[in-house]
Image 1 (cartoon, rainbow, N blue to C red):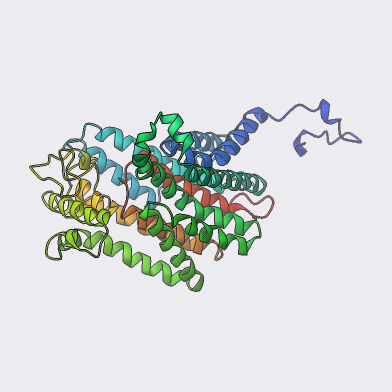
Image 2: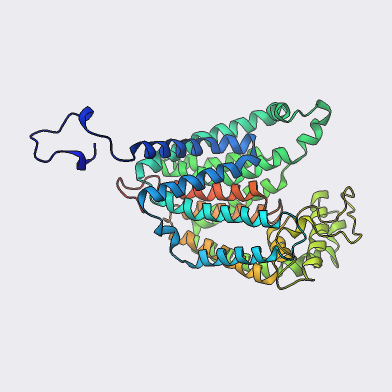
Length: 429
C-alpha cells in the first residue's frame, strides 16, 4: 500500500481492504500485463511469424508512449539530441525524395521508418525508467519466450516446418522451395539478433558462464541452416564479443573506422568486384555470393547517376530494368531484385551522399552510446552491433518492416537486459 494512502493520525494502519486503490492502478496493471505479454511473445513470434514483428513494434510503441504519459515523462523524448536530429533529418530527406522516387509505396516506407524510429526513442526512454523489479520480471519473460521460440524453431526445422506448411497451405511438392526459401532464413536472422540481449540477460541474472553458451550454442545450431547471412552474423558477433572483452574501447574504434569506410568505399568496391575483378564469375564464391556481386555492381552503377540525393526512397524495388537481365535469376523484369542486399549500398542508391552522411552519423552515434553502458554490458552491445552490420551488409532490404522491427526488438531487449540487477528503487540506471 502506498505510504500516501495511510492516515498519519491513526494509531494503526487501516485494513488494506478499506483503502481505496491508487488512481490509475488499473491502467498501470494493464500496462504491466501487456508489457509482459510483449516480452514473452517476442521469441515465438520471431520463430513462427517473422513478418508479424511490425505489429509487435507498434504495440511496444503504444505501450511506451502510454507508459511515458503515465509518468509525465514525455520530456525524455522531446529533448533535442544529435541522434534525434540526425534521424529527423534523414526522415525529412526520405519524405522529400518521395517526389522523385519511382516506387508507388515510397510514402508508406517513410511512415514505416518513422514509427520504427519513434519506437526506438520512446521504447528506450520507457525502459530506462522502469523500476528494477519490473525490468527483472520483463527480462525473465523475454528469456522464457526466447527459449520457447528457439525450441519451436528447432522442432519446426527438424520436422520440415509442419506448422508453417499448415498455416500457409503449402503442398508437399513445394517443400523444397520452403526449406531453401526465406521462411527459415528470416527466423534464423531474427534469432541471431535476439541471441545477444538474451545472453546479456542471462549474464545479468548471475549466470556468466551460461551467458557465453547462449551465442555459442546458437552458432552451432546455425551450421545446418541455409542462411549464410545468419552464419556470418553470429560469427561476427562471437569474434566481436571476444575482442570487446579484451578491449571494448579499441573494438569500438575499429568499428567506427569500419562503418565509415563502408559508407565511403561501398560504391567503388562494388564496381571493382563486379568489373575488373569479375567476382560474379569467381569459382571461389558460392552461387548466392556471385549473385550478390552482380546485384551490387548494378546498384552501384545506378547510384552514381544520382550521387547527391539518390533515386528516391524505396526506389530499389521499382527502378526500370533498362534491358539488364541477371545471369543467376533471369525470372523477372529487373536485375535488381527489390533491394541491393546491402544496407550501405541501398542508402546510397536511394538517398545519395546526403542520406549516406546522415546514416553514417546515426550509426556512429549508436556506436558511441555503447560506451555509456556498464563495462560488463558493452561486449554484448558491440556483438549485437557487429551481427546487425554483418547481416545488414548481405541480406534483406534495410527498409523491410519486419527486418527494421527485428533490429528494434533486439535493441530494446538489450536495453532491458541492462536494467536487470539495478538497485531497487533505481529507475534511471
